[in-house]
Length: 148
Image: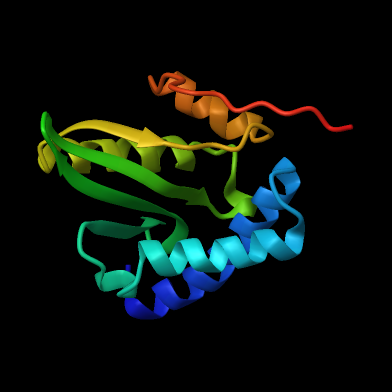
């Protein structure tokens, strides 16, 4: 990912993350926006150059189709990755790009000697959940709530 692309990504991703938090019912929108800003600042204090974080832009030929963001860290049993974001441009979804981005990220992880990849997905995002399950991801925890 280039610096220019990162700046554009960051603005849109913070807004999207805040909206997802609010849509999930976890926080009201104002608080979700604050959380999104704080989380991005904490996770990427040096932006694109934050140690341990890898951000890629995905292309189909010359056309930008999506992106991936992984964090890699060493644990007692080896290197682990966490996928903070996998995204496909909205108008290009359901065309196989998400699967291709996930497969490319998985291959990059293998090349980096990573032993496992984790991720989080909002409960309402059935399309992403289905793709992740098809790709072999397993549920490790579930949060539930009831609106009153």
